Image (tube, rainbow, N blue to C red; front, side, top):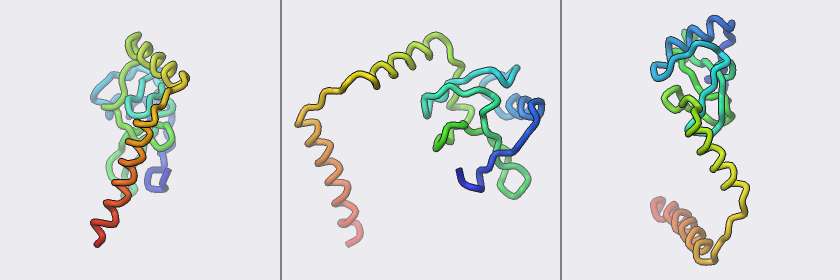
Length: 125
């Protein structure tokens, strides 16, 4: 995480108050409540959510996902109901199962990457 996005240290009551004030999409009654981040696919809780920004010249306070390299915001978090948990389970199973690759698909991916690479030189000329 860059120094610009260093999280602000807060007491539990301060953090809960900020979650309640800044998350306009879902109500928070406890820091132990969980949310599913649609951007990174992780379950996060109120304690882990990062509060960044503030009055030190870095703009307004913002909430971001605590997962490394995920900068999702409250609109990207949903309450993990049965439907969300079932989808997560299916995605985990799909990721674990071996994927069959055909040579055609592999060649298509390679050729698409090669075209993108070549376009860099075309634009520079």
